[in-house]
Length: 316
Length: 211
Ligand SMILES: Cc1cc2nc3c(=O)[nH]c(=O)nc-3n(C[C@H](O)[C@H](O)[C@H](O)COP(=O)(O)OP(=O)(O)OC[C@H]3O[C@@H](n4cnc5c(N)ncnc54)[C@H](O)[C@@H]3O)c2cc1C
Ligand code: SF4
Image 1: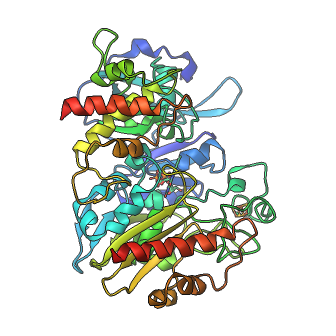
Image 2: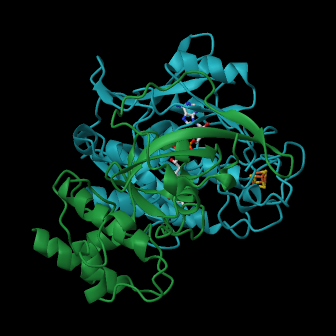
Image 3: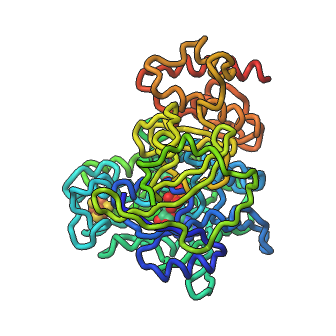
């Protein structure tokens, strides 16, 4: 790990301003992703801004009938929150499917939103990686791709977004609230928050330098059945190969997003109108522009089956 | 300024008042120094409570809570396995909640209360979970055991507090300490010897006595 200085931020605006003053600074929340990457010198901040004291660790009701989730709320507390369990069960389920009890006790809403890819070549500093070192090339293309993306890929990067929580937030139409270094606040719809890799896979989100996430809001509850189906190599404590986060209504209509298949939680609204025609029809829309490799083509069939089982579970 | 290696921290269990309200500073909280290889290192002073004792130490800003416990306080019961949050050997309780001490920095725990395996019981008066691990053979080589025991204690607390898990059928209902629930909740603690079934037996034993 490279040496760094640190400070404890006193207010959200103060934190954002501090980050803008030092271009190599990083916010630290739970630290469970950032410190992992700092140990490997994949992230090399020279200054850390500790945001844990900002009192952004609560849930409040919004005027629109939804909820505002503090950026620093721990994943355990969010998943266990009474209102989340009863009205946004998909979010609870997705969080509980991720990481371990110890990690969820530290991991925060904002940190989870921004957790970086688990592409094995991104983690191996001996290998070329456009995300880690722009312009160096992509070792995954032509390499081992079983875990990597099948859709929305580019010639520069085929990594996936590994977060379970993000899949739920995408299906639930979350909004990310931020404050910029100049003190201005804004609200970014989750659909625009995570980027596809394109030519700039190192740019992963819509956030600007120094911009701090303060909260995530959810619109008023949708009702229906909330289901998160995660398919992985072992039954617990593993990242998804594919996952489906869905809210299905009694009449069979619904909405869903898919994890493990793209650089962002993958949702295609037009595919949702195919739900009544069954999972294969939905999948066809969902993966219309898919570019799988021979090693990860199985993710298409696996998603179709996961979707079918979600629809089936919703019926019972 | 002393570098961390020169400190004899066991003798530093003093000075810390019980006032947990020391104001945190907005100014950069680290000082600079050079280590023996000429690299600039930044150090900081921290105060925290470990196993009920106030501790004050000076550490490199990079020092994880795990390294602070093992290298600075000689509390080597907490183990370093993967050092990347994947194995759970470093699990400790901070303000009563289990975390991976390898993925957090010591200075992020200013004024917090850390409990390690050394703080749970003594060889004469074991914590009930320690006693249950012994009587159920919940280990073989023992390396993961301190983390397993800290985690197991927290798991039973989490179930009692009503925190749901991935395997809870109805997440709005109160979870129960079933084998299925305990196995899922313990999945962040890897045991290479494979003592898992005996660990679940030990936990079931303690959960039964608590009920
Ligand atoms: C062994 C292991 C297994 C895991 N398994 C899973 C899994 O199965 N599913 C899953 O979804 N996740 C998994 N994770 C990832 C885990 O969910 C993330 O590490 C965690 O959510 C990150 O949250 P944090 O608060 O610790 O983030 P940090 O590490 O503190 O921060 C992450 C990033 O977010 C930035 N940041 C933090 N807060 C803010 C803010 N308020 N505004 C702007 N930027 C901010 C930081 O600068 C940093 O770049 C796993 C992690 C480990 C180590
Ligand atoms: S897929 Fe993306 S993250 Fe992986 S090696 Fe290629 S550029 Fe890097």
